[in-house]
Length: 592
Image (cartoon, rainbow, N blue to C red; front, top):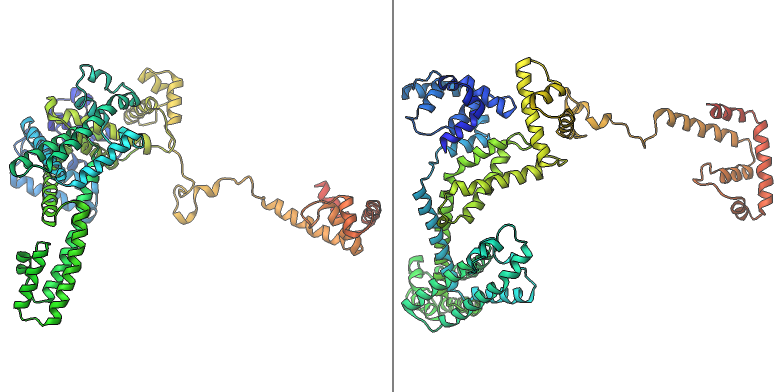
């Protein structure tokens, strides 16, 4: 995997074209990385990241040649001195330490790739932890009460099967038919898969509930064996991880309530003079345990009032524990034991998952490098790839015979490509056009490095063997949206934003605003030559200062006269305005 990562960082074309010693010069590696990434690369950043991606073995010839630059491995003291000098010459240490990608790459370099046998061992640890957790859950009657509720909701159609189990995995595990893999594959519609698996899931739940009914009659080793068998039956259901978390969450919630009651009993005991060690030895949450605490307090010489207070407080604690025992169907001691088993299994499973995930972080970086430059930063791609890697750890089945990296690559790549499609661009474009735009961008950068100028679309089309129309369409689609809140190029944020330069077609232009204000002022002076009644009638008729024009009939109703009378007053007022000296002022606005 290390060799594959280094090969991909340098680039296949460059590796095939150059000789081994030429490729191992730092300048050639930096140029190849800059050409592949399509962005300016700081020497310190690139050197550190490439060194992290190269094998961690100090005896590796590739790493030594890379650091020395001439194909000869420097001595350990020389390497340490070189690293110290480089760190002193580069950016401040605080800025370097604050870079999340750099920190991730450095931590990732400590992880050692796993052999096939080690992957199988870790996968078996994950299964063992999951089985232990499920066996602990099966010891709680609450688990089967919840399963019975899920079975009823599934049978009634209130809960879809896809929300209860993982359909793709259950299609293989639950169906014994010879054609299960063909009908339950990726090409089968989800509704068809649910219809085929629903009866089998209901039958499996019925068998599980019936087996739990027989558990009450068993004791000792037979009960432990039956619990392990029940855990296997729950595992074969292929419940979704969220459903298993729900079952474990109920046990944890009950244990938190019990721990809170135990804490209250401890405070009462300490107030009565009983040491913590003695309390842990005497108290088990039962009625005899409360009696032992009361007798221990009496031996401490406490007065009758203190003993009554202790007994009253312990009685309240016991009432709460009794209610919790009735709710969970388990005595307090059994609830503590069940929670311990669940927590232990969950812890072992989590530690094994973390080990398998950490050992394959290099694969995430390798795949992120290949998808870099499509709209998401390298750090974001690595983060999305890590989510896909964790999903692959959840789904991995070591019995299928392939290595984990082979299986995880699909999940990592799928998580990255989905993130690019969802977050990479404000305006989404088809995937094939995005790939074409990436090819054109790489060809444009290489041509610009060779010729020292930007290539024309015709030159790019000839170089790539594409139609000119396709190259121009891809270049148009590849343009990034421009934010109106972005500051003006070359200036500070206080100088303004791009949105300030965009014309607002709904806004009134300054010249028009001044002209309108002058017209309003001139109209007021003209109307002042009329009587108040004539001025009001004209204002209402033409909507000057009223917001709307009125009909003759509406104005007549306002003044209590006929519409004909209003028409006569209007004609008389307009005749006055034509002869008024101020009336000539309005002609300039009409002519303008």
